[in-house]
Length: 83
Image 1 (cartoon, rainbow, N blue to C red):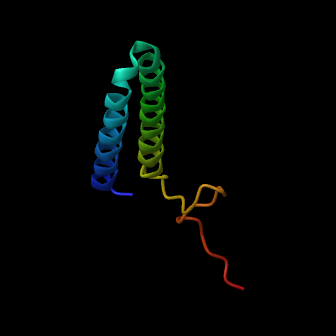
Image 2 (image 1 turned 180 degrees about the vertical axis):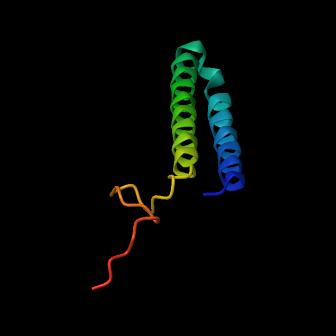
């Protein structure tokens, strides 16, 4: 997913959660406080997940010193044996 689509999704999600929070306002703090806590925990989880995904993408983009894959120890510089 591109960054732009992800940002647009999060903005839309924040708008929906804000409307739900405003709808809970007439019920008082007894309903508002647990909702705000749940939303805060949810966004904290999303932030941690986004950081982990960004870190894994950055580590996957690092050069592998000539290795063609991470499942073996051979490199692209190893001699080829022709039978």
